[in-house]
Image (cartoon, rainbow, N blue to C red; front, side, top):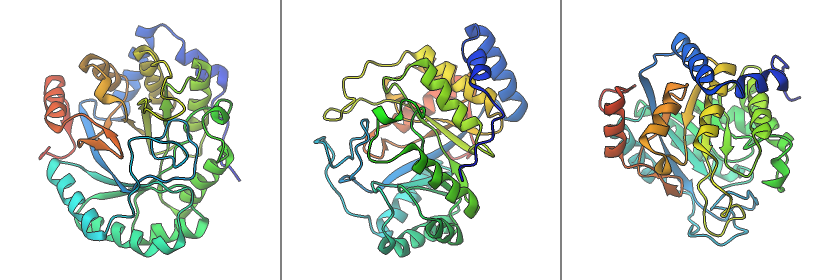
Length: 318
């Protein structure tokens, strides 16, 4: 059963989202400051451990096997390769190491390797996160027993707009996996993407779904679409920065205790836009030159930006 508790209504979300911009910023920052260290930033690293040839038709994704993009198919990385990447991430200052695989369903035969990866990364002193596609209840339990801290499974967009983005997996199936993760005792990482061609009302419905989860996700990644040549959404007009900020601010107000991660799309954002996102509640980012298959800001650029803004990463060696 999908655990959605109607604490928020669409009308209440709309009232927050559409209020005058300065009021929204003030209210979001006030709530952010009440629940978090306002100048602290969580840093994580994301690695693709199995790339491409996914049977899903997600319109934004370069790893779909149904379209031709720059991505080449790669088999599951070895434990040695994953642990070396994790060591490098820790040396760069990452607190959490996230591992992503382009699967629709996690193959049972891969579970022993995945559990070894979790155990190996945790032995390095890093938090662990995986995003592998849909999970069964038993798989979620096994990943928890191996020590997995977080599982990412995004809802992508609103329930209404979802079918225009993905047809090979239902919105309800995504909620089922999130529930399996929650029931297994793994912390939930769940968010989505702005700029898929959705309306502002869709963004409100998207936030409503997240905020009414019981409890809300511990981590909420907000991505800005990276248009990838060959995908169905490659020519989608870019969403305005103000709309991105409104989305993050509303997420902060409706999910005050969650970590909100400013995720994909930062390479195309100005320092000023990122600063607005951090001010209104984003307090987590991915570091490293790549996010799965797409570019991410260079580490030195992030260091310079955070220094200019007076932001302190959770790890002193960043």
